[in-house]
Length: 242
Figure 1 (tube, helix red, strand yellow):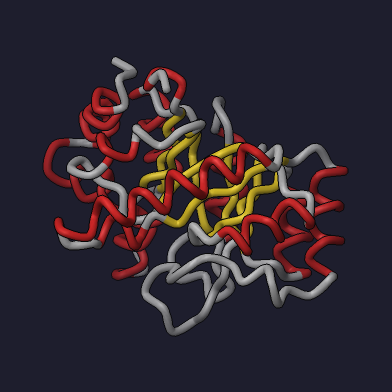
Figure 2: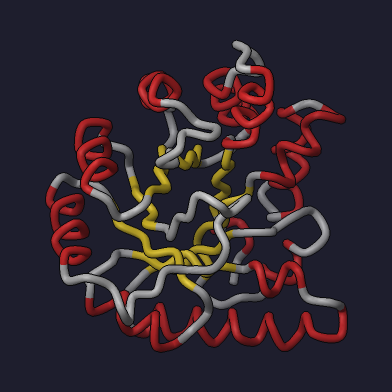
């Protein structure tokens, strides 16, 4: 597909991670959100975790105020997070699995065994005008369940592709492509994220129907060396946007 159609969401969680190491006031993820937008990012993504390990409630409020493009809130399917989302009114929420012991989100949701209450959460946020996305492995059973729960989009967990050795990468990419076809066939939008970086993003752009990628760690890591504006623009260049 036309690379110019792929939107870039920048996940700024790890700007806050660096701040929280010292419980300091800098670097400020609010300032990072502004810098990302000024560099051309289409969306700011943040994950408000239950244990508040990086993004804090204060960050969420201020980022909502300053973001001019779109705000994507990653969240667990809990009543607390639903309440926050309804008060915050991000443009989109991405429902993700969450375990306190994990370093980062490991794997997609298990919708096959999900509680029916998830359907109520999805309906509630959609009624509030918030787009609902499910974060899923490239698994056709899970994708079918996402359609049943009436999600607007699926963000394909690309960790297996991103972390695969060279001899396995093609097979993992094929799974992502098959998942994308199924997502689109079921009337949902195709997003992708997790482990994407400056080396593996180009091949991912061959995935059919891809509309959005969310990338965090790689961009933040590069920003430490070259600055946030250049890090974002370098990724936009690989996406064929500039």
